[in-house]
Image 1 (cartoon, helix red, strand yellow):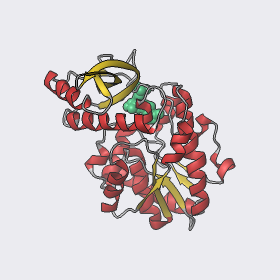
Image 2 (cartoon, rainbow, N blue to C red; image 1 turned 180 degrees about the vertical axis):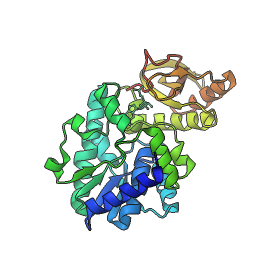
Image 3 (tube, rainbow, N blue to C red; image 1 turned 180 degrees about the horizontal axis):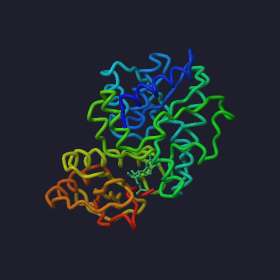
Image 4 (cartoon, helix red, strand yellow; image 1 turned 90 degrees about the vertical axis):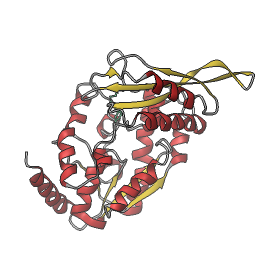
Length: 310
Ligand code: XMP
């Protein structure tokens, strides 16, 4: 496939469809939404409003880091603080599907509903790719970015039309387009990160305090394993607790699971044989996080386990 021609065609088509209107898109910093952002910006310039929705579920420093990368490319990104909306929608929820649904609904109804009204945008650019549709149809993934799956018809509900310029591509194609658009390697080679973000890594209720714990553990795991070449690595906060000793006192503390996997397309995964010294270092650092007194390494391949916990 000629990816230069693909970019040219999509730019022309976006220009034609949006006309002199305004489009909006949400950037997460993942490769798909990054490519849509760069493509949309090339077609529409400042008539594309790109927002980074700070759900409070992102990793340490992530909103600012993503904004910086795009500022360097000359693409302005507005961070929208929606932390309170997401936390209140997640309050009291423990079931994985309920949590995912609450996140999707908050994203599209509460946050986007407001933004679309404010900006007058008639189009939403979305980074859906072919694999998202295939895997959703096959029941492999509960794809957070497929609106129809959560019963939302955006045109009917909010008056905006969804445009999906990457819908004919798979991940390798998206990376090719990213290269044509000169996106930096830190974007094109980012490890996968799920739509529900850190909420996919908290078993049980998502609270501000539990998010801080899993965020700190994630920072340790990413710091220790970023050079490992593994497909994906993550930290998970369990709902169970365990007894430990700190400063001579017994405490009933939190348990963090560390997971690292090798995979080609996330359909199947083998566990990374992380060197023992690295695991010990991770354990030492993770149990230094307030309230955490155990750190486990997950030895389960996919199947039977999935990569994420929620
Ligand atoms: P599982 O946990 O099903 O995940 O083995 C397979 C891959 O998909 C990612 N993942 C998601 N990605 N929205 C996404 O965009 C989601 O809701 C979602 N759930 C899981 C996961 O990180 C892994 O790479």
